[in-house]
Length: 328
Image (cartoon, rainbow, N blue to C red; front, side):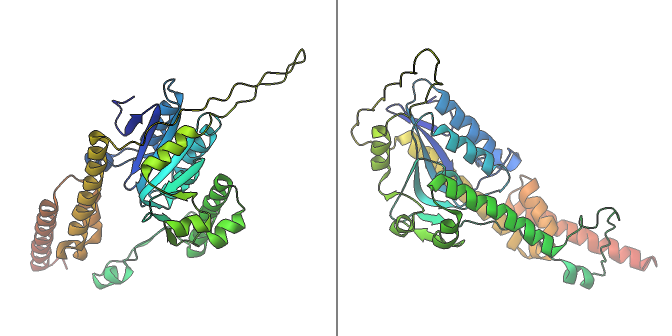
C-alpha cells in the first residue's frame, strides 16, 4: 500500500491525499499535471479501507473543489465506510466546495488555524459571445426538435438545475454532519467560506489542530462494531471493541511532503499556463481557440500563443485573397 501513488501509511493509518482541483475522470490534462479524479480517489480509498493491515483512514484535504459530476458517489463511499473503520479528515489549506463535500463525509474533521472551509453551492457558467459574433458578422442558429421545447438554453431552467444540484449538496452535508438542512443553509456560510476556528464555531468542522493531533485522535477512535443479525437460537455476541494504542506524534515523511509539494507545483503550473494562454492578446481575440489550446493540447503557453497568432495571420490572408477575388 505504501507504494501506491496518493496514499501514505503511518502506524496502520492510511493517508489519502485530496489535493488540487478535482475532476471526475482521467484525461490528458489530469495525467499530465497529476491532478486528482474522483475515480482514482475512490480506488485509493477502497484499497485502504479493504486492506487488512490498515486500522483507520485519514483524508488529507487541500483543494478548492472541482466538478459536480462524481463527487456524490465518492462522498457516499466515504460516509458508508464509517461503519467499517474510523475515518478522519484534515483540511490543511483549503476544503472548499466539492472538497468540503468529501471531507464532511468523515467521522471527524480537523482543520488548520488558517484553513479555508465551505463554499457550499454549485456554479455553472456560460460564455455569451453574441456581441463579438455580431461584430464579426457571425449569426448562430439553433434548431431544437419541436418535441423537446426545453432542450435548448433556457436560463430559468439552468437556474433550476443548479438549485437542484445545490440542494443535493446541502442535504448531503447535513447528513454527514448530523444537522438539519436548514442549519447548513443558515449557518454554514451560505456559499461563502469560514476560516479555522470560525468554521468550528459554525459547526462546519469539529476542531482546529495540527495534522499530528488529528492523527493521534484518529488512532484513539474505536473501530466500529458491525452488528450481526439476531439468531433464533441465541442472541448474537457483540464483537470486541479494538482501541488503537496512541502512538507518539508523527511528522509527514519526506516522501509525503514531496508528493504534496509536487502536486501543488503542478496545479500552480497548470493554472499559470491556462492564464497565460487565455489572457494573452491572441487568447482574448478568440477565447474558443484559447480554450482549445489550454485544455485540449499539451503545447506550452508560448507555443499556443504563437500557433493562435499564425492562425489569425493565415485567416487574414485568406480573407484578403477572397475579397480580392470578389467572393465577398
